Length: 446
Image (cartoon, rainbow, N blue to C red; front, side, top):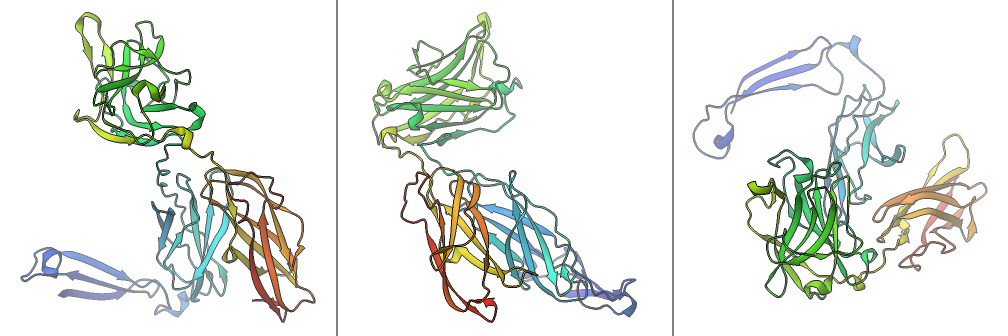
């Protein structure tokens, strides 16, 4: 039920309506009245007001933009907005722009006047993108919206690449002694080929190791297929000397064997402990389980303290299935273009010149740098080879070339080939070229 309805106009003749909604919460779907009060003011946004002196005929106002990163396969970014003031002329569309930390803004998409959202599926997991939006009417393109940079979803777990598969997570800032070096954030396991075939890597992330405290042990305890407890650890002695080791039992401060030479820590708080799989009798398909990390600080005769644990409740958990890095495929890019990735548009003020734009996808597992792109029409190269600086694994890049249609008509085949000389080693060299048939008629391309 609506009551206490009121209507007025502001100084520029725009209508404002105020009302109180007397039925909210459970009242909406159930019986009985609600005592809650919900006040609402509706304000005219577009169209002419009641006072002619304030009528406008200009470009649209800046939209208010929001965005959200979505995990999935593939990952995506959902952008949404409400129609801004149209400036006195109906909005005819919107332009979406995107950039990264290493690239400038570029037009990502143009959408229709009725659109209030756009899903960007040409994103790479873990990569942060920044977006802005403009509205367009008959008078031109309006001011840009606010920028949004949605927090990207993390890259998918991959045992063949660091940081591998996350096993445990812990809140940041909960170390009892307040030391960053004792503040556990997560534990993962990885088996990249780079650590040496037959090895396995345990990764512990703490807030920081810019200062490494003495007399401290960072042990990861787990259960192997033999149903016995084992551990890996980084440890410092009373003088601050650092060592890495592994052993049997649930007390990670006991006797240990030296870990492999690739074990190390970095000041950002990442501890890497590399051990041979044979140390625990592991083979592909075996499962490690019941993980627990308790940071231990020795206090001499006073004993020891554990300033942080993962998990905090000391309930052992998590599971990892051994991959065996001999079976890991060497990461390689895979460059491809589809027919729908090729677009053609007229170049304003340049007569018969058209712009061919191609979106190049890297569906491989490694980044590709210095990617040459060849454009052809009916088999003849158009312009010179274009170069895309870098395309991340799972990401996209754009290249364009100018094509003159002077004197042309009928159908023509546009083909785009990234890495035409196969100079970049790819996991699939047979899917590089994409093509599209267009029709030239009356100086236009359709």
